[in-house]
Image 1 (cartoon, chains in turn purple, cyan):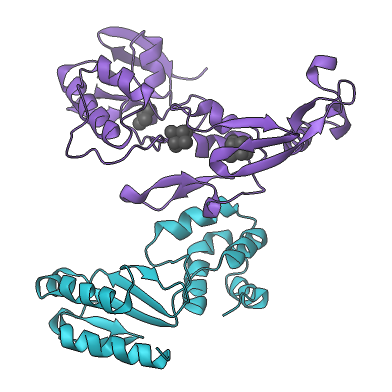
Image 2 (tube, protein in one colour):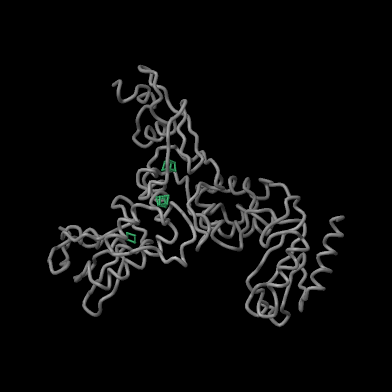
Length: 241
Length: 157
Ligand code: SF4
Ligand code: SF4
Ligand code: FES
């Protein structure tokens, strides 16, 4: 039996297993902690800092990114103090300066009372908040590692290598699915799937029964390999089975 | 210099084909070609069994690596603090005008590269410009014009 550790969240006491991400403990206790770069199925990355909480393990209170903080000893947590709201507002402000048009940010801005991005900082109209969810999903879940961060600091971007088509991309669309700003778009046309942001155009399989294009070839091959299936089992689409 | 797989193989052999030597390998490649050719990175990824995206991430993260081929002639203007206060921005302006090149770009015909660097560690010589690998110290507008003219002459311009 794994050891359970006492966690007090906004006054509410719960017990969680060793190494539970603090954010999961907060959620279990019913606290709402905003996130931009966290997904429970992918390794924490800790870049957006929006999920910060005030944590005290006995000596002093610190601000920690709850998604990247494993519970290892007894801990007392506040999730919605003035200090936290001020800090979150500042982060949202900076994000808005890069991405003034993104809905997720406007929702958070409304929640934390941010009126508008600092006018002197606002320069771009980026649609990507650099959360890295797409990059990590592609590497960890899909196993394709087709996209990456490029450069650093204010030059940082997420791209396919050389901002060109990468055959390693299986055109599965998982990156589009996790993207919080929905800035990765894909569509199927004339037997090809286009993942626009990564310049990917991939062949699709035709269903033997209905004759419709239904799945990118590379996705079928990847599934077959991962799950030990016969590639022929993808000959007929899910509608015709 | 064209990409030559054998050269990359030799570099790989030096590190026993070890993935964790990626940065050293990129450094060797940068020294060999003075930039990182795309074909070489693709080849390296295959050989090391490292996704191209990972290599691209590393290659674009460090300023020591360049993905653009440098020109046949290269002018590096030091923009470190000491050079800066002694007039490096003016020298950079002059060089950019004389070469008709924006800073940190290479001419389309592959002739010249104008780059900025952040301190070359020779502050006493400032303002400092490196002309095709040679340190030219105590620069002023007249000297930089002369250097550019000499480079242009070598290019037959
Ligand atoms: S569509 Fe391509 S880039 Fe996106 S997750 Fe799938 S393989 Fe990766
Ligand atoms: S493209 Fe979307 S998922 Fe990827 S880093 Fe940008 S915002 Fe995040
Ligand atoms: S959600 Fe925790 S740092 Fe982004």
